[in-house]
Image (cartoon, rainbow, N blue to C red; front, side, top):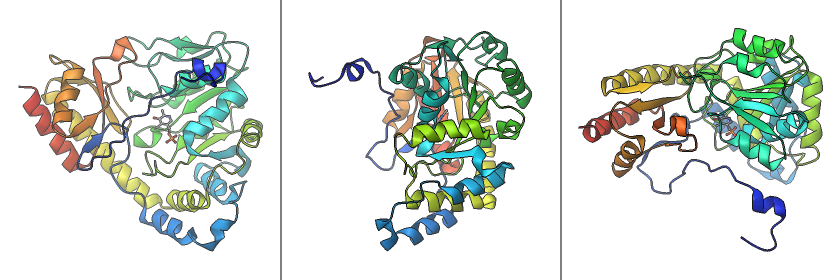
Amino acid sequence: MSRYWSDLTHKLTPYVPGEQPKITNLVKLNTNENPFPPSPQAVSAMRAVVGDDLRLYPDPTCSELRQSLAQLHGLAIDQVFVGNGSDEVLAHAFQALLKQDERILFPDVTYGFYPVYGDLFGIHYEQVPLAQDLTINVDDYLGPNGGVILANPNAPTGCLLSLGQIRTLLQGNPDRVVIIDEAYIDFGGQSAAALVPEFDNLLVVQTLSKSRSLAGLRVGMAFGQAHLIQGLERIKNSFNPYPLSREALAGATAAVADVAYFDKTRQTIMAMRQWLSEQLAALDFTMTDSKANFVFVEHARMGAADIAGGLRERGIIVRHLTANPRTQNYLRISVGTQAECDVLVSALGEILV
Ligand SMILES: *Cc1c(COP(=O)(O)O)cnc(C)c1O
């Protein structure tokens, strides 16, 4: 607290990121990072740009990266936006597209940044309760609103909407923007980027942080028709015209090009999610049908806080999100390597005696 703070600063409730502990040797399953390293091609592309050229500003239009993303999704370059992590892309989207007179809608259990941005930017919002089984019912998002934002798969539940359900959402909101945050789409969903040519009210947001193992690089992107992308560009160029460094541009472009590595690592994670889910079910956990790189689990007898505490004593950290009473007995556990999942399962076997 300081008397020099603005009124806005006083009233904020900042997002609290998952812990990034300084101690090594921890099994870190709390922030949905990818357990595999980034593509070796991305790493060498980044190394190659570290040199004298760093005295020069990076390309403010990020055209090479945008072109390769456009190609990947069968879109035009003017239908692609990139930013410093999808958190920044989402911030621009809130300001450019969701700051309307009517209240925007998002689920009561979803990515914790949405209410934070709503408050920061003075955007009114309504948190729509998830269905009893913790899935999103799209019919709840078809009434009057100032826009809709959904994570698909949703976080922290991992539940996936089909493209048919997204289509219903887009058709039912012809005068409002619908933002689909696809941070986890590569772990078992179908991207709504395919619907961009058909719907002028769709913005799809993705990130290289999860499925491309580059959380540390900070690269996010958005896909939408050119008029929406231009709105994001207007905000970006009123805030920071150089959000991506030369390293970020080089690394991201090479990571996107390395399709073989991307497919191999995400397939491994999906297989590991299946194995881990079976192990956890055998330990009397129930869980949502996650299509993300994490599972969302509740134990039949032991409380989430006690399980998280027991795991921590054994050097394993998972995420216990307590903001919403409906899901406060759940743990969100990132899918790690086979070795990490083995350690997790045997620790749970000790704790749940
Ligand atoms: C991780 C995550 C993000 C943020 O990703 P960055 O690109 O690292 O900023 C956005 N949305 C959801 C739902 C996420 O889980």
